[in-house]
Length: 295
Image: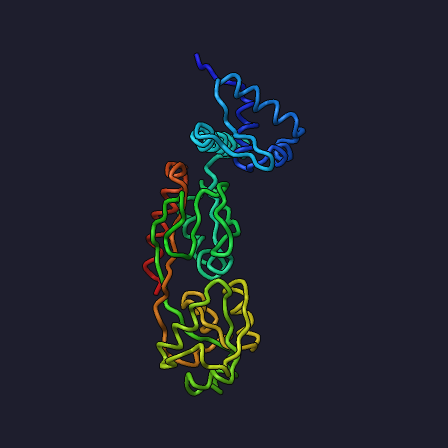
């Protein structure tokens, strides 16, 4: 027979520990701040030791409180996930994949029909994520661009690509060499600020930062950057897997042949606790099978 303290007390403590505040915990659990304080106090009395060091303007976990909180958070997260899965239970598993909108629209979705044909029993849900957004524990996994370091998560490298300048065909006809970019508008992705300096250096522009004549516009994603390029706003630098269809359709052109390898790669990212989720193993196997075409 299990001997557990009050579950309400454990929930109150976990929420307060996670937020560092009785007030924030009360808002999350839809009770009063006084109720949270009382539940935690009763829990401490039941356990026989303090969980918080209550200071004038701060709520600080004790050593025992720090030891207890991570296990409770993981347990409550697991309960929430299981309840969600049971509530949405259907004939087969649900696979929720977080990823950036650009890689979803320009790479994954056009290929997703082959996964569905091979595994019609798995319902795939695509969620918004990417380099500019944090991981979400509601996702089964994510396909993210980065350096492979997501603390608390397992990351398996899938593929990389190369970066190449693209712009509207009319603008491409006016660019005879990289030096002509001094009179063009360079389109940047805000969180990948190293892209253009690396390409310009490889093209022989020794000090890109000193090229004061080069103008730029910044966007929050490759999708927005490429749309601006299609609309003739300027010259974008993007992974080749994002631009091949637009080049084939004549919406974009490559003014220069030089492409440089990307520093970062795409990774399959998930919690260790998700490793045995139904649907993840087939999706991983399918990803590795289709990744061979990327270059």
